[in-house]
Length: 283
Figure 1: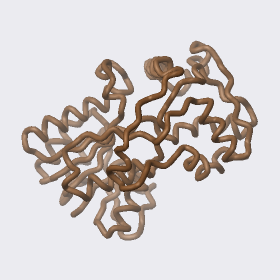
Figure 2: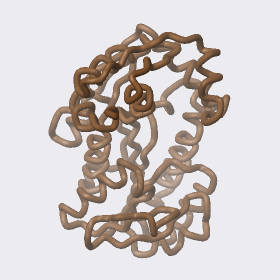
Figure 3: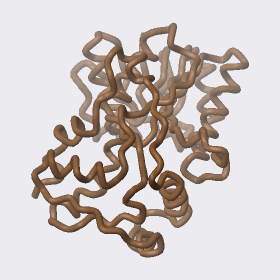
């Protein structure tokens, strides 16, 4: 079996490569800049920019399974090339946002939903099997607070009491490994969550404990937060985030046991993630 890993520079993709290498499974690390990759020994690299269909034929040649990031711009072409190459299974890194009633109109959810629908249609037509991994809030989202915490400044938040279900990137990688290597797990959608519903204030307290650094929240208005991020977050995305945070303000999010069911161990806690990433928050 040969597995193509798109987005191999990402935290999930790189962890998945390590898992496949450790299991003796042949993998191919893909990126739009393969020269920047440092995959484990014995793993080949290939250029695969999901926004450039010219890369698809070479990247998919001889591939049995694909770990796919949700880039919708040329998904129909990717699906057609995967069918032509004889790919048997595609595991998509999707998002729990696709489950929202307004997912098709939500700029964060829409790209994931478009890819899910394209893969589902191809699977229904017998092209290949498709599996959707739908993680909630990545624990790595906390890294956006690293500069403030390193500087000893409060973290400005429009909804400090908004809940999330931070999931460790290693748990997402191990879940992907499970569905890629066990045919019995293919063809389903898995909502992946961390083991706890934590609001931002609770997450910052955990970071403070793990890092020994002050990590205090500072409430700001949605308008103030939107202005502060305008240089690097499109307005439509900022509005979608604000809407999501407002809807979960003071409201714990539902949790699943999908990580444990797929991997055989409970999902890692946010405290475990914070301990493992503590240096990112220290001067």
